[in-house]
Image (spheres, rainbow, N blue to C red):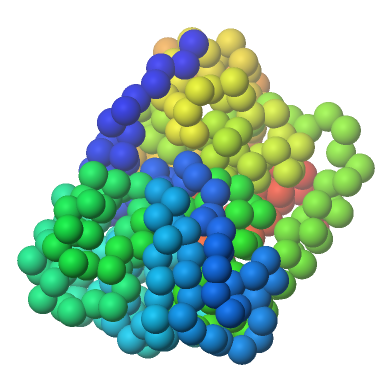
Length: 321
């Protein structure tokens, strides 16, 4: 019932305006600090260097001093860097890093997929942040002498919070990162409290693309559905971002459908009605088909709580008034 696709990252990066680009980064938990004066489970409010952290490959990466020239290849991490006060240290970012306005205004841009070593070297960075979309380029960049930290985006809300703290350590902004993380935790907990009385949440389908890519339970978007006690129709998928069949979706009869491809692929309640067999789906019959902002929901950064709250309101309007 579920088709796996090793080309998911390529497909996602090719979508209109890169609305889904951050999704493919979200298959692993945030890396954990392994040694330094301040790299502990609870960051201290004072920045201290050097800091050594294991990246996703388990490779110890030491940042000797507060980085002054960061290049980010991840839209989600770019948002984190600006949220914790490290924005002025970012000298370049990928073409999809468009939030906040300061990130969108960056003149230096790097390619999200198939990045070029020479153009990156020319910018003389002291920290290069790569994620899953650049997985095949990591060693090539390291061989060229670039200081690469390979950090796929978090795969859960808790991992987002920990990721924020980690970036505070690596960039010299632990106190600011702690404040952002605390705010995220407060809002996540508030949302949990609102759905505490829910015992039987609705069946939900989250559509990333009109080719029926969705979100598994092990993705950070899937973790939001779990927190909200919705029954994800992609539960049981073997990948974080499975491609479902129309037959599987129809059979599992979602009661609520979220469309992250509303803008990029022009999907809506009306287009779903034209798909063969979809008029029998409860969400389509009852009009519970909702466009969602992929720039907020598909990127595991500080704005993820906005997506969580939005999904909560759409699932349980009576609880989120």
